[in-house]
Length: 120
Image (cartoon, rainbow, N blue to C red):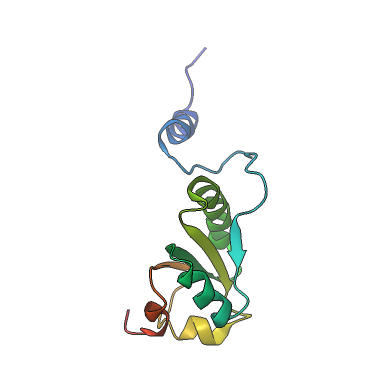
């Protein structure tokens, strides 16, 4: 009988080396990803003093995968780093202000002043 196929070897390699491989379910507990509701709430979160990783998303296959990766990272780095997801169709003004054309994308914020800095 032949050994494992190339695909099986590749998947096994991913599982053993990739920190955020999400091809299998994990019990991460309650979600630590914060859903964007308003820019005011976002600025208040930044005033708490922790960096905030923000995923700007739209619906699509990449977003589903990114959601799983965000969940894992948020569970690992909580409470030192906060993770937030912005659904751009619901909050177009906040997303358009970032001046990006391709979605999804991620930005890391350290201070409230960065929210108003649209030249990134």
